Length: 329
Image 1 (cartoon, helix red, strand yellow):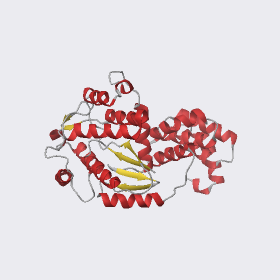
Image 2: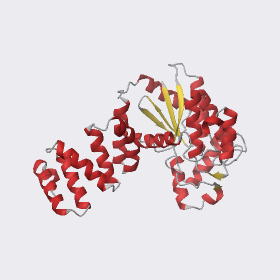
Image 3: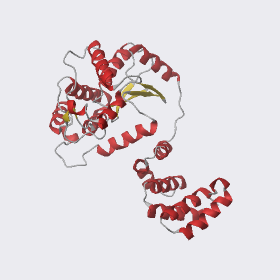
Image 4: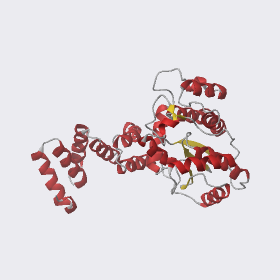
């Protein structure tokens, strides 16, 4: 059974959750499991060069970001006190606690590469090393030199290439994984996902074991990878992230560019991201192929409206409304 842990490495609950997962699996007697760490960013606006965490606590924007790692019902201040108590109870050490607000994209890139290069065991060691660097050694894990040292220890220096210009190996993979997590509905760190079920937060080991037992009995419907990617792109559109949807659609557009569903979803994403010429070209082609597709015709009319081509738009909008009354203005 594949267990995915979607988490940010600057989230104290992720460090605690890792220890609790290890305790839960130590007593696990079910089917063999593989634990994979997936990226989540609670603070995607964190600066490229880390700043002292003390300064962050007076920044309203950063304070909002911290809520993605705060259990319901707790303020951020209460959460910081609670997480320190829980970390001590888990044996993470009396000196446990972060001092920096880093951007975690490069740390996530290293963690993703660890799994790609050496599997779950190597990735687990890298995750542990990154968490210790941030919370125990109070180092800046946004600093490429810090991460390069961890990569060298893990035998990943050649793969990670922290001295290379951007985009570095694995950067696109991390971006796609972040979007996939968003499409799946991951909204807090950590979130455990197994067999289509999800458990939010750093739950006690017994709760994690019960969750894994439920997941082992659950058989989700397995979809082809292309269909799953298409659904994730659609989820991002529903969440008003058309550029993210286009990122996930790109491989499908390259490999299945003739598929009508892919083309229509891309047209929606172009429209949503105000790439109106691309939206119009895609929709005109779809309407020419299927004149009775009322949705494509309606969206073409709206695209033309936004381009100021009102007479052309009126024709398509009227025809769409005649076919589907719900599209009547």
